Amino acid sequence: EEKRAGPASTLYCADGDDSLYPIAVLIDELRNEDVQLRLNSIKKLSTIALALGVERTRTELLPFLTDTIYDEDEVLLALAEQLGNFTMLVGGPEYVHCLLDSVRLLAVEACVSIATLLPQEDLETLVMPTLRQAAEDKSWRVRYMVADKFSELQKAVGPEITKNDLVPAFQNLLKDCEAEVRAAAANKVKGKRLNIMLPFIRLIQYTNQHVKSALASVIMGLSTILGKDNTIEHLLPLFLAQLKDECPEVRLNIISNLDCVNEVIGIRQLSQSLLPAIVELAEDAKWRVRLAIIEYMPLLAGQLGVEFFDEKLNTLCMAWLIDHVYAIREAATCNLMKLVEKFGAEWAQNTIVPKVLGMANDPNYLHRMTTLFCINALSEACGQEITTKQMLPVVLKMSNDQVANVRFNVAKSLQKIGPVLDNNALQTEVKPVLEKLASDQDMDVKYFAQEAISVLPLA
Image 1: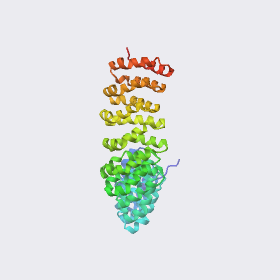
Image 2 (image 1 turned 135 degrees about the horizontal axis):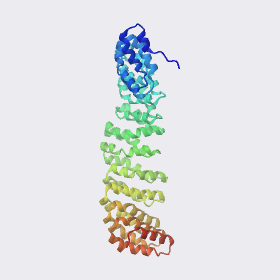
Image 3 (image 1 turned 90 degrees about the horizontal axis):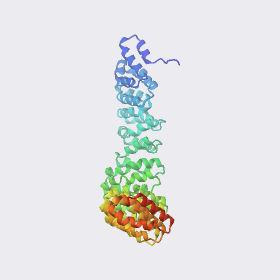
Image 4 (image 1 turned 30 degrees about the horizontal axis):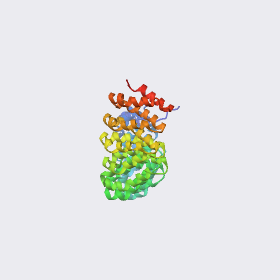
């Protein structure tokens, strides 16, 4: 491949000026295979430009940079930083447009510096075309730079261009196919004043999943910026809509950041708006929707606190235990275990355990079995004393249930909670019941009783 002649040979040979030799070496380093060498040379660009003078910087150095520096992001970012301060080195503000022709990634960085120097009437013709191209660039890194520099760009170009040009471009970045670009854009929403923020907030109504996911991760945090009244007026309706969103990531981002809103508007105001939405989801006809809200309940409980949970959500959690869909009952059981881990054994003893044990007398055998499943899940978290004194007697009594499915689940429960019990309870209470079940007429009851006997340390 023929080696392309570059500015280094031109600069060194053009007028035989030996003083330019170090400059030629620096320029050669700009295309060296070693990234560190290229970075070192870039940091000395102002030295090269000063030695060349403004005219040769414009006509030779900048075109060389455009043609040569096209690879690693680290190099491009270093170059962007240098060119952002190059205004005087190309001849002052009247020549700054030359910098915009350098490198695509650098254009955004340069636009910030240059826009502050140009009169308002020149911004539309000299800066905005470059910014529009950058916002739609094929490289996600260039689009990311536009999103990341939004605050600086907004200040540089002023409110009119921001409203007419930056906001539409920014809306597209919030819908970008690359997660990094969406995240950068969404994070910039946090710092905007309400009149600039609202166009972005309204994007939440779009059906595009990428937009909703990106905004949901930060939109709750906007409440601390907007204040109580604006949060209630502008954000609460969006929170409620997002709680019902089909995308799990959107729902999770809302629930996991509820504490931000709680700090601003208070739990009472929040619950008045939030609770109906949660109840609606909890009782949705589609079981998968019910399942989704159950899975978020421990997180929601942690955000809202034990007092709110006991008052508003406890009843829901217990209702799920008798849902007609097994997957819901199973998830509700797991949910209780996580709640006990979060709120503690004493809370469980006072609020959850009595209700769970009360289901042991339910006429529906499926609900009686749910009692056993809950005991299996809660025994370890509740500890030995609660398990021995409150749960074990109920399990032992259910060994006389008329339904074989309940009896063999008693055997499985005794095997499960056995490690939590002390030796005295195992020998004097558990062993006799398992021996009785081992001689049951039902084959499944016998099997699970014998398995429990073989596994537990029974004398």
